Amino acid sequence: SSKLYERNFALLVYDPEDDMFYGMYSKRHYWEPGCQKLLNSFKYLSFFLRTLFPERFRGKKSAELIIPISSGDFPGIKNTCYTHFRRASSDVSTFTPRDRKKFIASGQDCPSDNSAPILNFGSVFRHPNMFPTMIDMPVPTHEHLFAFGVWLSRKIISNRLSDQLLFGEKIGLEWEDLIPQVVWRGTDFSYLSQAVPSLDKPQLEDSLTNLPPLRQLKQEDYVTERIDKMTKKLERKTAFGAAKKIRILERVRKRALETAVIDEQIPATSTKAAVVESLKEQYMHYLPRWKAAVLTAEAEVNAEPDTLPWANMKFSTFIKDGSKASPSGSEEYKDWEEIGIATGGYMSPQTLSKYKYQIDLGGGGGTTWTGTIQKLAMPGLLFHHLTPTKDSIHDWMKPWVHYVPVSSDLLDLKQKFDWAESHPVESKQIADEGTNLMRYLSSPEGLEAMLQQDIVEPLRRVIEAYQPVSSTTHSQTSAGNWRVAIQEIVRDDELVPMMMCRGHSLYKKCEQMLDTKDMKNTFTRESSRTFGGSH
Image 1 (cartoon, helix red, strand yellow):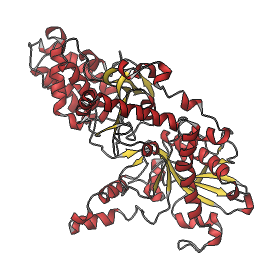
Image 2: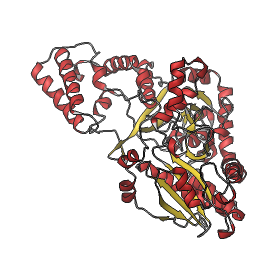
Image 3: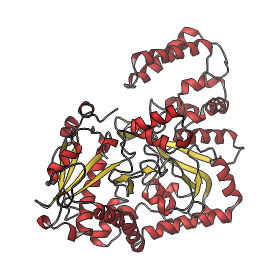
Image 4: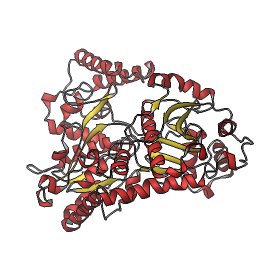
């Protein structure tokens, strides 16, 4: 299983000698900030194992246990393995002999059916042929995995979960009171960069090149202004090479020489309409959240006077220096803001709940871990964004019963909105069923049902399937000691303990054996290449 990954993967090892759970990370993999989710998952998993199966973990009276685990917004799979399994999810029978040979060769380092099950605490792939041994576990947040721990240990509903849910009766809103718009506020973030690397944010400079010339300006002043502005932007783009920056500046210079656009000389709506028309031409190349922003701008341009546009999906934050910041007034979004596209003010959950139509636009891992349950609980109807990935909570939701599905490219969103507006009775029924589902899942009965289905049963299957080293002659090893056996099995790999937990309490801190700095220095991209991890 380790060979599938390049990051965010570990082995949970129960050592009966000292009655301790260890988290082992491989030098085959590199460390990134997102690996903190892996540490949280390991901590919670140690507690669940100890609490749910006390007879299995009794120190020297018990056998060892080794479980592969992973976590993160998106599984940290190697690109070569992701490509292999994506091709496997298509019709292999249509491959030419040459394609079949390439396919077989690409899978040599990507074990599937014969590999151990991997507990993945986060988003997994929807297609059954995409990493079939990956088991989707609850995501490692306070609203999900931690809430199960609180329920298991204290039999109370965690306020980290209940505070997130705004049911209609909490805020005194009825269906008829809701604003008939599709609303969304969130972060301008990446989306499945490994799965669909071709998608990107639009560049406003590209859209402006298609605007009709209005009046020729004094060329040297206009060119200087545009070049200076773009130069400042490019200084922050550390990922851009010098050659790419030069090409961008040359494109800006050429456009500046050909046309001049002055806000004061053209009505804002006309400028916005022209930019929207240009953006629509490249719509399929944009990230889903930017697709939503373009659809909103188009709705605003086409809205009749004194009527609400059907869409209101805008960015209220973006990532700057590793933290969330407001796009309003920022240099990065100044041009978009001036035209009136993409940016919008922050909306609290209370404000969002006043809208009739919600949408949970997928983020970095293709889903939104907290957004879905929040929006499902609200009195409005959820348009659920179907992407190549899903979370364990999604298995409790049924299309056209609890939500209305929309495609990953959002091309059917307007059609689904029109349907909902023309079928108010059916729409309200679906909205009510979605709210009722979240009311049940956040109740003692619902939490217990999810605990059993999403945590207890997967762990039971893994424990029962595990064959201790002391009681088997494993085909990969002749060792009778599990420590030696692991090293024989992984061979050219090197495993380093990163954390250890007793697992007796949800609240007691585990001992992190390497601090964040040490982990970054120990598990680097260079070391992963040395051990054959990254391709």
